[in-house]
Picture 1 (cartoon, rainbow, N blue to C red):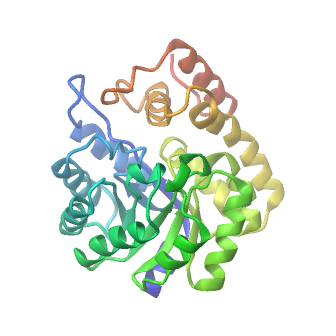
Picture 2: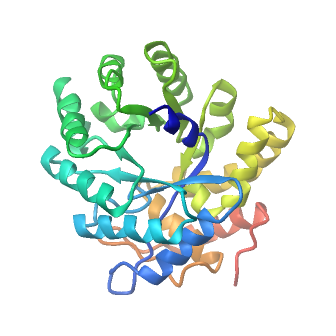
Length: 312
């Protein structure tokens, strides 16, 4: 498993899934999207079937197909991480088995959405155990945002989950700097080899200063060159350059992830790619509504300020 501690370092892009007008997966557009992002120098891996990839509305067969396409479109040996997101532990285990068969290298295990309400501390351990037993792949934890209620694991749950040797790291998505640092310090005490990947696109700079092995973020699917250069500057401790790049990235992150209403990140990521001429339209599956004119205006302004040149 130590091999993955090395392979997980760096900037990893969480990709989207292009859709046709009738809400089917646009396989040709997905192949182009994966190829372009994975082909960017400085992008070290991909997360497919994450939240940006609409894993909550794809069928098991569709998620397996996304992994197959990513495996074929990415360079040989490129790291492919597949998200596993299901309410049932039995379904999560089956999705894990299919992802491994399709060519995934590692799995990111999301907590069931029902955990946002309340759950017994044993429930996350049981859920993870079912996924573990269905596959031979290493696993990543997902640290949910602090605003997601009980879905954001407390210290005791994190300690329990980190005891499993096949769990090699976490996509730390607390989306709050104090929680990020507390979880990083806790996990490094429990497992000095544990890989902590930043997942808050708005505060990547802070995460890098505090300490981070890299990132697994959807913004890198829109601006892979900018994000790769940002990570390279932080890794070199060139904080002047890192701050300059952060200042370019920040308005895009705010327009995608922070501006109300919430829960619009995937639609806005697709809108950015449409504005950049990479998609024919920002189609998301229901019940997400289409991108509004106000959202387009905000995203266009942020992209232009970052020098990404949205098309007319």
